[in-house]
Length: 250
Image 1 (cartoon, rainbow, N blue to C red):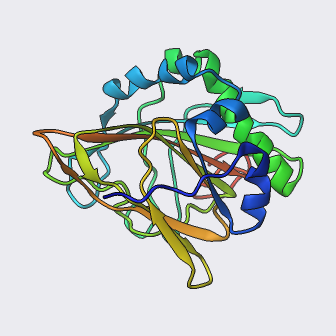
Image 2 (cartoon, rainbow, N blue to C red):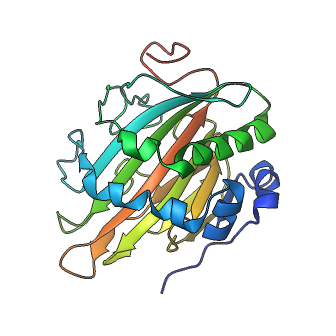
């Protein structure tokens, strides 16, 4: 038995982020927010079959594949692709993988060229602006596949965490042949929390990263092999995270 997420209408997304600091959008709400048709979002899905192994897992696992890209949405709301760069987090946000430059293969050009891609990135930039004011937003996009190659897959091997950004969006792309993968969200400075399982493709968890922490529990196979695919978008004011914390990148 899995717990269904509490759903937020797109018209109440910003107020939910101002209130408890998190919201869950069902696929119809995501389509309305972007805007996009279900077919346009589904057209992105096959690219998850072409992700490459994550060579940086410090637990020795083989269960994660990913690609990464960076963008800047300027204060006028225009999207610009940033030069390919390393993903970097400080150790205070990622005790397992923080403090190192992780160079992942870029998200494929044909994915970035899909009609829904730029609209998806811009939709949540508008959410950031509504929540925290007009300014440039430094965006990182991560395609993840967590599979059961090792018998168990860990969506968040670093445990419950914040990402060191302003807004985090976790979109479920597909669940296949697995159990587990429960999402857990907690107040960063309090006792309240909730748990649920994202099951509908293109549903989205949206988080005010400064106010809540989050994690997903491990997955196990229901069949010989299973996987959980997600798209994670992060938005940060002031610049990308990097060893020098320089605006626009490291």
